Length: 561
Image (cartoon, rainbow, N blue to C red; front, side, top):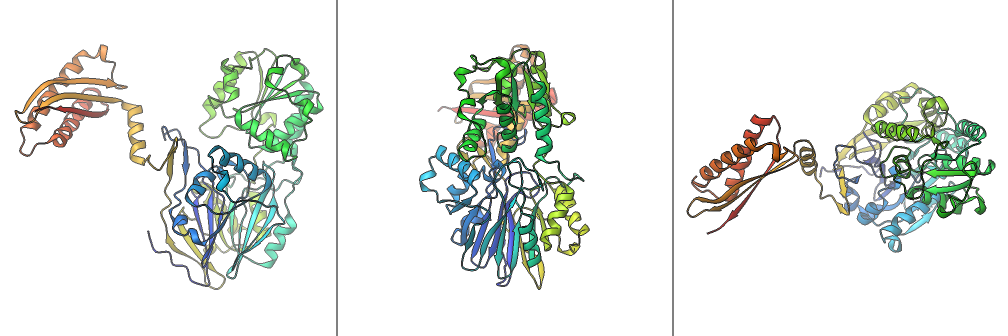
């Protein structure tokens, strides 16, 4: 690991995850022997990461400095900010401070992993204040697509560092939790050394529309849908959207059934914490759905991204155990497809339409708005906080770059804007400004099932190769003493060729393998490893010449005396 050089009068800021990507948000602020960690997010794998369930940060730097960590502070309860909490605490078991809804979600995650008993969990709100030896931490309320969203201010002798969390400036939020502009302005007027700010929508030159704008559209859809069931699909984590749909259902006399594990959890937590105002008599048990008239029914469902195992996709495909699509159903997609999910979403929409449903989706229906601020809101945050130094976070490289340019547009010195990578340590002080003070390893860690870190990039490449070109197994029984092949070689293919229709290729391939093994056995110093290497090389060359494909070749040698 490169030496990290932080002077006594400097505060350091860094990202363990969250730079150059959407997801894995995990940030650190370090002054002398104290570190504040902000968020513990997960990233969901791209399609090419075959068999990988989650991508999490490399926590090595935090593990090596665990005695300095004062706590993990959570900005809000979305997966890209709390989804890796179990993995984080497994590596670095420190106190966790989170707002109410995020805390409820974290408790559920830790309970599933049987880690709740050993966790030190603490509830916070925007009036909470924590004083450590040299550092003070306080908060300000922001607005996002989930209640209880906080920005965090870390006060050090070197200066104040602000991390916004995810935000937009929604002045009419359905959660009734408007952004605390006064507190942000007070921070700015007091002097902020550095700002780390959400860059997600840096490419959008706009103010993001309010959830109240979406609420009007949802109300209009419910008003005109007087016949048939309404099936409402959205992100379970978008509590604002869940709230407006369920409360619209109550106002229109519709009983509500909830399907999908994450949606059930969100609704349960939302009702327990008072964010969802839905009387008990309006909540349907699954067995009561068939007894309820269609025009008095609202179904809240997961699957707005076309996920094949989510409730909506199974309803569309006719495989859901409890819900069968009915002609006259109205299905509302209250989300935009995440890049990469468009084909899956379109497939589900087509199946729903074929089943006789009326599907409402897309921007023309005004049924979705982002939870992240556009360029105008990013400039407003910069203008309120007035940082000396700016480090954009939470975004892919192009988003960070655009956000950096917005900072210079509102008066930040271009020399004080830093586009960093995960693992870069930026040391800052009022007098000397900022400098890169070193770097620590911050590569992606792949989680496959319950195994963490065993899935390397080499394994992923092999999986990709298997999915593209298949596998060939060459099996032979050999006697190394007499230099004879006693049986075989046998040729087995999976995902490469259809063996029943490839007799000539297989027979010729067996001859090639026979000659390669015999030749390799007779080389000076021959052993099983050298024979296997020869088979891999020669069979790979032969198969490519014949098919223009490169399957994985696995030689299996059975050695007898």
